Length: 280
Ligand code: C2E
Ligand code: MG
Ligand code: MG
Ligand code: MG
Image 1 (cartoon, rainbow, N blue to C red):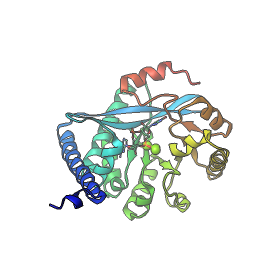
Image 2: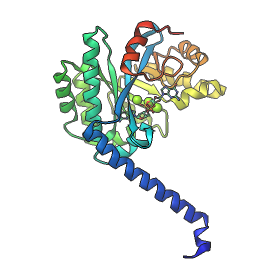
Image 3: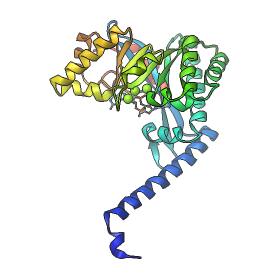
Image 4: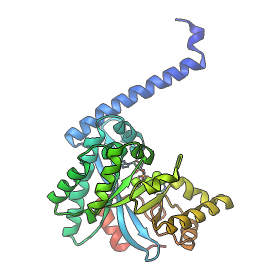
């Protein structure tokens, strides 16, 4: 070995890359096992609040994974890995099955809650996605009105004709379609015409800037006004303080989600929260 070469930054990067690859490999293989055994995975539910009425209008289901050795692993970490492998299909099936079972249980307790699920481009590229979703809903005596579809990675959806026709099919079947993380990364506005969207979720990164400078407030104001002219329902993601809520109310923003109102909750906590919540 050449000691000098090993100490160059390049070899440090190589080492870091190798560690990241090993970790990714471990996570993928352990996630496959977690899904097969149904161990360590669970869902939490974050309320969506309508600003006009201050009522809960739904919940978003978010997956959690407690790894046997590594502890809690964030979906921000393992979802992209699943999306790049064949695991995204069984993972999404797991989510749909568990969400449907939960809605069914809540209904029996007179809690009627429409729940949104996060769906990736690869999910939509499976030709039978809508069919499988409908069949699970039937198993739990649910309909399309009980579920909302949140589309991630719009760019990738646009590149797949199968994904585009899956969304069109879901829309015809009566599911509400929302576009997640709007305004993050590169946003190409022409896609608004290509996907039948009901709700636009403005990304937290744009919402966070509201408190920072006037330009950002002008951007949000114009964005909401434009989206309303196009007849979309507008939801603001990741609201963490009252000042932001007050500003969003003044702009006529329709719905909000965020830690200031509630973190994602376990099902029992969610049901309790719905009974007792006091929206500021
Ligand atoms: P997302 O769909 O945009 O979900 C919003 C994320 O922001 C969630 O993170 C939520 O816990 C977090 N959040 C909500 N309010 C606040 C707030 O006020 N402040 C801050 N700092 N964060 C807030 P989470 O649960 O870690 O999920 C991250 C991403 O992973 C999600 O972003 C979604 O893209 C993906 N994901 C989560 N669950 C699933 C799933 O079941 N299936 C798929 N395909 N993707 C999922
Ligand atoms: Mg989402
Ligand atoms: Mg989002
Ligand atoms: Mg987001």
